[in-house]
Structures are given as structure tokens and as C-alpha cells.
Image (cartoon, rainbow over all chains, first blue to last red; front, side, top):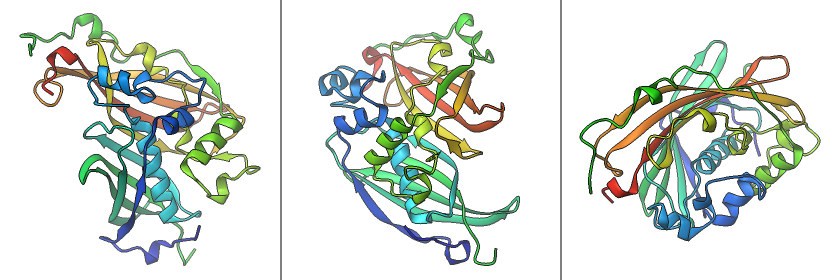
Length: 142
Length: 151
């Protein structure tokens, strides 16, 4: 993991897309085996009964993937300040998700160097999650 | 497919708006943080074993969700449709956090994937041992009835 500086970031810069394969086991690992969760996350039949066509991928897991994706890009001296996510359609376990992102703004705000990104998860090429992430980044001049 | 002619949101449901939940305490446990970090493949040295700091996303996976107890159930099924997290301070492993939630808004939605549905917006604040807010979230859940769903 490297350090990325505010001055080196350009608006419209695109992040390298990243693929994740959601599974029922990953959902269980995320929440913990002994923690209560929606049974549709771990059981395809239950997901179908709830109208999702299979085991439902937890929204908070997708948000965690997006947060991690941006954090990996921004480097270990950057701090994720906020993540805003809209879940556009349910995702089903077993179908790969491609996470992509683009820098949409950079600015100085209350003494911090803020970079704003828009991210998306794509399932079968269709967006299932849209996200706005704000990161405070280090400066070369600090 | 049938849709109600009137809102199914009652005054009793609306009475939940603005009411704060009880404080729900929980400890940020090392094993939970490690499990989530490993599952995501997070190699950020700031969050490695021994640093005592947890990555921000761990809060979303923890099961301390006081909003679950205060959100009125208007329709039988629910799905998370919007979520916003803001992080104010580093999350310290082993510290006891307290979560407090309240319902912000309840409204009907007509049309769309689920047919008639109900949107419930709630917020949750996470306080540290000094009572300072370390993180906050706003979530919107869509409640629906599969019998009324369009798909």
C-alpha cells in the first residue's frame, strides 16, 4: 500500500476497476457466525422466498467493499470521511460485482484536502450500487 | 398485484419519529475486526494486529443496531436502500461504544420495483467512552409486501 498525495490526484481520474465475488460464506464471515442477520444473506431459498432470486448480498458488505476499494486507492495516509450509498437493485450471491470509481472533485475544506469520488458496483454490466465517498488526503506540502 | 388506496402509515407509526432509542452499548472486539479485515483482504498497516485501531467499515457489520427496535414495521419485508456513514474519530479496538438511534421520517412510495412501499429513514450515532460522537449513519429502508411487488 502506497501513499497518494492530494496534489497528484486529478478530477476525472478513473480508478482501476476491481472484481469481487459475493458468496453466502462471505456474508456470514462479515457479520460473524453467531450474530443475527437476515437469513436471506446466507440461504438462497430464503432469498428467493423474499423475492430476490437467490441469496441476497448484504448492502453493508457492498458498502464495506467500496470503502476498502477507495481506501486502497487513496493510500494509508488518507482517511475516509464519509460514504453515501444508494442501493439501486439487489445483488445475488454468486454473481461477480465489478467496483469502479472516478474522482469528481478535489478541494480544501476546513483545513483538509478533500477528494470526492463516485463509485459504482456493476452486476452484469448494470449498476447495482452508486456511492459517493469523501476522503481526506495528505499533502506533499504538509 | 394489489395496492392500497390509502397510506398504510398510521399515526402510531408516525409517533415513532424523533423518539430516541435507549443507548445500546457494545465493545469493538479484536476478533470481529480481524474477521472483517481478513474477509475484505484489508492490508492497511494502520489497522494491522497490534495497532489497536479498526477500519471504519467494521461498524456497519456489527450487530448493534438500536434502530431495529424503534423502526415501525408497516409492511412485512424490508431492504436497505440508502446508507450514509460519516466518521469523526479513529475507532479504538477494545473500547466500549454506545449507539443511539432515532427515526427521522416515514413516507409512502408508489410505483417502482416493489409497488407500494414505505420508506423509513433513521439515524444512528456512535458515542465513545467520553460521550463524543465517533461515527454516525443515516439509513433508509424500503418496506414492501411481496404480494404487492411488481417484479
